[in-house]
Image (cartoon, rainbow, N blue to C red; front, side, top):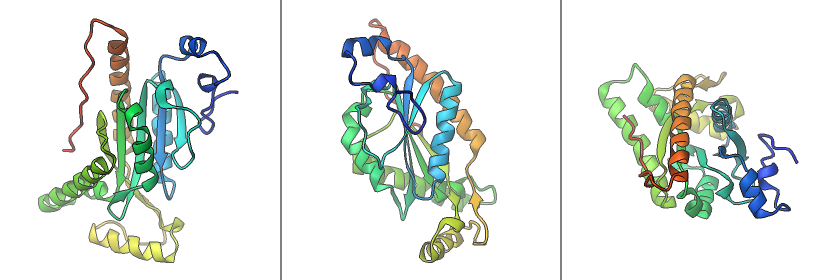
Length: 236
């Protein structure tokens, strides 16, 4: 069975093989990218992360957390999780996924990508100093809520500006999102969609993340080096 972005059950997950043989033949740099998305923008972000990690020399599986995993996370040397925020909370499917796999996630380098409209406000150049402070506070509040809900603290955290995909909303959701957009001084013309993600910054983050994962992998395989202390990136 071959591996693909939408079918991660590749050779590293073939349970019919001898466990020791599988361990010895498993790629040393196999990472998992897990996402929860409603209107597919977070899925696009997860796909970009997958491609960036592959460019960095990793074998990468992409997985929608709404679909139950058929294997455990021990196959991976690192994991990246991406989830969008709706009404102040990250996707419930991602919360459940982290709760179910927290112990496994704590054994490897991890990154959490929080996709919000508030981050778009925080990055808006026209925002006043007071608005910027409020947007950043909103982003951090949503992150803190997620960490309390899951009792999980990833190695790295990256807030990412999301999108307003009015064309994909039903009438009620479009009305609600327009009100939210107006409050956050985002675009309110519902005849088109708006992508606020800074893709260049995301690429840079994943490039740096890949380098850190490689360093952590070397340290973990070296008995004379202590386990690297988990670090959390602060949002500036």
